[in-house]
Image (cartoon, rainbow, N blue to C red; front, side, top):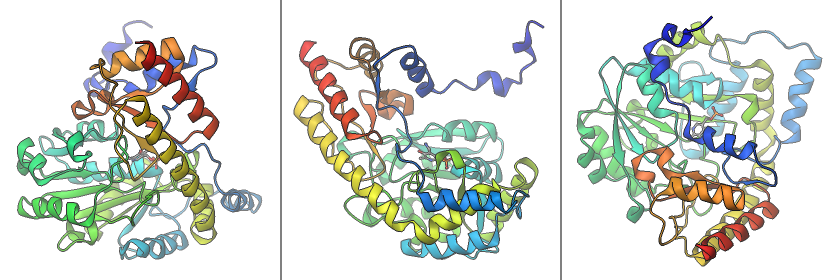
Length: 387
Ligand code: PMP
């Protein structure tokens, strides 16, 4: 059958392919490639979590769970998030989702009406914009700046016209920059949200991957709990990306609305993964700490090498990304990334993929082994020296 694209919905036709994919595809065609492009840990999930998944299968625990997720898992999540000063009721205020990705989509659908404006700081993780569009909303891009190490400020929000938005997305520790926000910096954003009655969707999936200070959730600031949904999950801290498990925390009315959409579209999150997640929360703090320590070692190495090479790289304190500037003489991050992959077979993601604010930068993931990182940085060094 031909002409099938005409049959696609306008929404499907207008959804662009992910800019990250294109670079993966280029990389796949090459031998001897070193990719610092991926956003997932190079570790496997902690053994205890995998063993719990296997055990659940051996016992034949393969049915659906409650729509909101197993109650024992929700109880452990409630207990776990107290370490960030968050307190949520397992029955009313927690929803277990198929990755944080599903939770982001559900929250947009629960809060955004056709034509509503959603403020999305940029550079930011690539799925926020499309989920706003799927809900019929309009993205208001809010540029953050390299001079502020990509922290979102009150002035950035004002300048972008975010006062007219109904929802604000926040993602700290940040993908793609690795930036984090202090309590004081978050207070200014919280003030803006209260003044302009914005509901905040705070993606805190990298909360456990902080290297200098403790993570602060905006939901713990005065007047914010009732206007915030927090997302977290097991993909990053527990290296469980393929298990597809995340969760949302928020006021019962919003979580209930999200659950109503979830029960028709997903029914319940993967059961096997829920058993793994219970064990992860119960016994895997040590394994998370080991991964965090290793990420921190790599982070310091990568930042110092980029600065040595002459690619300005600020001290990113969270997640597993750094966001160096293109070297002098290179303005265009896409041209740089493309030449680098072709000539030196090193894959980085151009900052532009994450929105205008990312122009002139590159996202580098250090969720790869030290050997690969060293090799990549050596190749980048000779590339920069040769141009
Ligand atoms: N939010 C951010 C900021 C991410 O970087 C990612 C994964 N790349 C996700 C959400 C999606 O996570 P999950 O695997 O839980 O769907």
